[in-house]
Amino acid sequence: MRATIFNGPADVTLETVDDPRLPDAASVIVEVSHTAICGSDLHLYHGVHGAAGIHLGHEFVGTIVEAGGDVRRFSVGDQVLVSGVIGCGECAACRGWNPVQCHGGGARVFGNSLDLPGGQAELVAVPAADTACHLIPEGITPEQAVMLTDILPTGFFGARRADIRPGDTVAVIGLGPVGWFALQSAQLFGAARMLAIDTVPERLAAAEALGAIPVDASGGTPQQVHELTRGRGADATIEAVGVDQTVTDAIYSTRAGGTVSVIGAHLGMAFPFPMAVAFLRDLTFRVSLCPVQSTWDELLPVVASGRISPEQVITHRMGLSEVTEAYRLFDARDDGVLKVLLDPKG
Image (cartoon, rainbow, N blue to C red; front, side, top):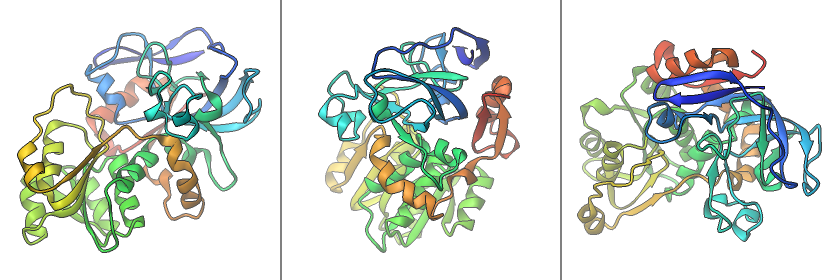
């Protein structure tokens, strides 16, 4: 089969590799029909972490073509979406749809290590299939389903953990796909006023069209947030970038007694946390990898009803054979790119 391989910083190629085999009887093999490049894939692309030889990709959907004998919820021929984050599948946390709290080995993300090959490929092995997969229901298109494997759940999760109350002013820092979905999700939770923060003009314009107040971060994020809230700060701030500066900006942008919800994939082992600010202002600070499965019961009806149309973030559709150019384009933010969908047959 063909799979996307990380060779080193800024070096991603499509290679022919061995077809995957079932790792155990609780696993399935999925023939991928749609897959996408995520902003967090760029952490590997930039060499922040990862090893040469990783098969990339944690956003994918497809058809089960082989199933182990212990798989109970799915059969060959089922069309499924697969959570980008999985656990052991057996512990109480995993069975409660929270693999991030897995105590049977911890959470794992497809396409981020050599031992869990990812889905920017023609085929992928999915361990713990009964808790990792979900049937794609009627009313949900495959393109919508891809967005339900990570980025829409992550944006929704960030809003859910921001303690948003009806009438609140909510700031969202970073208007990539995850931030875009955090913006829409905050409105579902009752936010009355949205401050949409980024430096890319096209993203700011799109947020304004959604009803948010655009804030160009190049002018200083906390200062502008406080000016727009008469010195009070945002009731809640959702950080969707994952770098030191934007996390710090989120803390300083939030009012006393407010909540900072970090969903940007910050993978640093050290962060200069402004403890005095959080302590003296009674801030709630939350940060977590998204337990994707925990959001599906809420989000699937929202998408099916048209309240959120996640496929709207897709700006580029390319064949898997174009994956090297797709990564370059996505990293450079060329041609107004926001989300790249890859066709494994292309």
